[in-house]
Length: 96
Image (cartoon, rainbow, N blue to C red):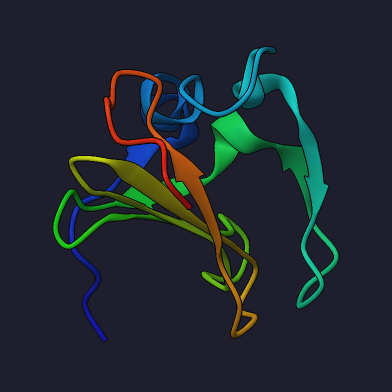
């Protein structure tokens, strides 16, 4: 299986800074699949379309998915079925 070229997790800093007030690339994570620990900056990030997908550098398990829309951001943590919707700070429409 061939995987597309990836970037490191630092490429998530800009988009995630619209949600978090701290530097998200310094956050620690533990992969529930292989147990590897490390920072968000160490993830392998694929994208940009249809969104940014962060995968574990040890086993390629899905760690997070971030999709940007004009008025909000969708953030899925892990391989779960749910996602969080955040209004974009630069959006005029802040309705839920």
